[in-house]
Amino acid sequence: MTDRILRISMSNAIEDELMSSSVVKNLNVLDFDYAPEELIHRDEQLRFLAQMFKPLLSRVSQNVIIKGPVGTGKTVIAKKFCSSLVSLARKQGKIIEYAHINCRKRSTDAMVLLGILNHFDSRFPDRGFSVPEMLQVLRKQLQKREAQLLVVLDEVDALLKKDSSNLIYDLTRFSDESLIEKIPVSLILISQKDIVPLIDPATLSTFKRSNILLLGKYTHDELYDIVRQRVDLAFHGDTINEDCIDLIADIASEWGDARFAIELLWKAGIAADHQHVEIVTPEHVRAAKAETYSIVTESKLKNLDRHQLFTLYAVAKRLKKDGTAYVNTGEAEKTYAITCEEFNERPRTHTMFWNYLKEIEGAGFINIKPSGKGHLGTTQLISLPDIPAEIVGNKVEELLK
Ligand SMILES: Nc1ncnc2c1ncn2[C@@H]1O[C@H](COP(=O)(O)OP(=O)(O)OP(=O)(O)O)[C@@H](O)[C@H]1O
Ligand SMILES: [Mg+2]
Image (cartoon, rainbow, N blue to C red; front, top):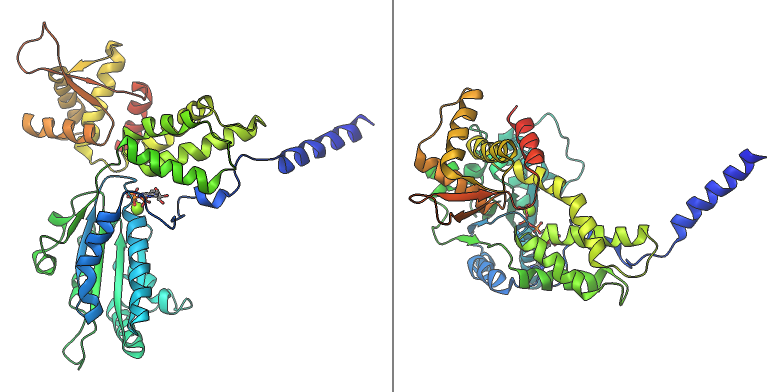
């Protein structure tokens, strides 16, 4: 009998939760891959891309690099721009085939090419063809359609890291002598990092120096507008307290990261739903922040190189050991040197160390401020604004191993 009651109440609980109302009316809009109809505060950048790629309408290829920190809209802007270009060209009777490849997921030449070929034929076999053969198939496909090609290589540093990659060179010299009419191939390379040093000079010569679009971190006000747009698209009317949007923009503006802002909004919505309340409040945002921080930190840490990690590790270790709010740069550098030795690496020069500090500050991990009275010279004080030193230290240690 009690077993039966238990089962009934359990199924009631499931039904209650599944059928309960939500503050969110359209969850898809909060998905990472969702691209809104209108991009906020990126008009100028879309215009820049349009100017750069105008020659494609006369079948002249172009290559552009898009660079910017995490969540600044690199992917979404490329997707938006390329689809608009494709449909505009089609109206003029011109065929542009556009393939968007994420090189973190496809990190070899063959895998990238396969991704491009899948755009033409989703059943193209994923084994059995060499890179030159696949390039030949691609040529045939484009000739058959009298099309030109536009390839976006997103997170391209993952591909360039491999010394053996020739694909970008091959694509920039795609039309071989045997072809009577050239097939224009245009590239957009996207990365958070500076990829110019990773590209060989022969390939780089096809990129003009001016063809770089730099996306900056979003400011508080820009993030506010981006979050406002998502609230209107995703939430039922009057379910979000205005303060929440401000608070989300505040938290995310430290990194200038729109993805983080949208994630906070989504998690705050879930937190309100879990409590079965009809309004999202700042307390839900704070809960979302606490939950999200560790995940975000982890993914951002993966973008740091070894010496930047050593530097961050040194700061975290020092702060934890001393139990203080700040560590000065001299002490941090000493710990950095010890850390390098622990990992069998030679510490870099003072200037390099200072650069690492600036870079991890730029990535939002630490704050640096001039020290007040009582300290000599140009000492600066470093703090970890949001994340406990212990968490940072442990995560960095995992990565270094
Ligand atoms: N200007 C904008 N207007 C509206 N939404 C935006 C804007 N910029 C970014 N977003 C949204 O923010 C999220 C992150 O953007 P996106 O994925 O393009 O960033 P990214 O620069 O490619 O980041 P990463 O370096 O991590 O790949 C996406 O959900 C995107 O739709
Ligand atoms: Mg991206």
